[in-house]
Image 1: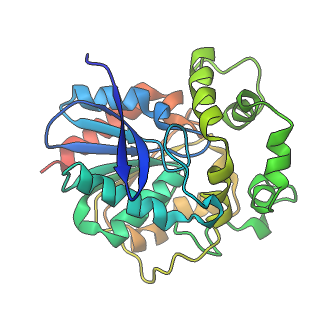
Image 2 (image 1 turned 180 degrees about the horizontal axis):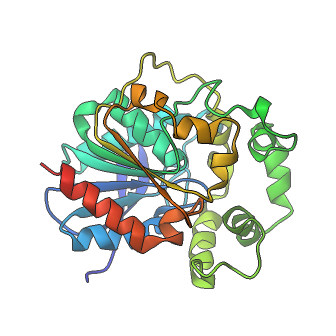
Amino acid sequence: MELIKHTLVEVRGLKLHVAEIGTGPKVVLFLHGFPEIWYTWRYQMKAVAAAGYRAIAIDFRGYGLSEQPAEPEKGNFMDLVDDVVALLDTCGINKVFLIGKDFGSITAYLVAVVHPERVSGIVSLGIPFLLPGPNCIRNDLMPSGFYITRWQEPGRAEADFGRLDVKTVLLLQLTSTSTPLPPWFSEEDLAAYASLYEKSGFRFALQVPYRSLGIDCGITNPKVTAPTLLINGQKDYLLKFAGMEDYTKSEQLKHFVPDLDTVFLDEGNHFVHENLPKQMNELIITFLTKHCN
């Protein structure tokens, strides 16, 4: 198996870190969440490349080895959408499969709504169709001290994170303070994550997704026409968000995403692609094969 190669690609005035493996006209673009980075897709990138696809994973602007925008506090989800489309243009890619996790899924949905001609299909891990706006995550229905509410308050997360080193901040997000590390996540993995966040810090990450989640993205009557696979870990803490499990399992989703299949993995958690990589890879490759024209 060839090695994953790394480059910096200029996109809309910023150099974005691009990890890539595999070749050919069939392209899969992976979009990370928080507290992840391109590295979170290491198992999936190798699997889809071995199946004959060109696999690309990026660090979003302001994350990891990608450059920071000049004014991080003005960032929003549409910046990420525009980055994705500009990256495809720069790389000469007409259509792509998007695989997203966490806020990377929200970005994938937005790309599919705004630029449907560029999207062959979507695989979303854990996130049903959501658009940024006041009703995206109902903080008002969550317990007091809910982490998204805290982090949306200017200065609060900075204070929370500032007392800790980067490794500890990431550990708290990844494993819910469980010790030792879970069997699916090694010290080497933690070091890889930490080295990238030590480079970028959390300034842009607090803006996108957290502080821009409630900002209306200006899209009315959204529709994702691309075939979509939603994969949920039954143990994903996101399902405990107010109304989220009911929405994820409802027919309402089909209104926004008519061509939708949903899979629940009993032992999957919020990091299902790292937690159950073999099952995840099989599901992804089956989906790609089915929808690759």
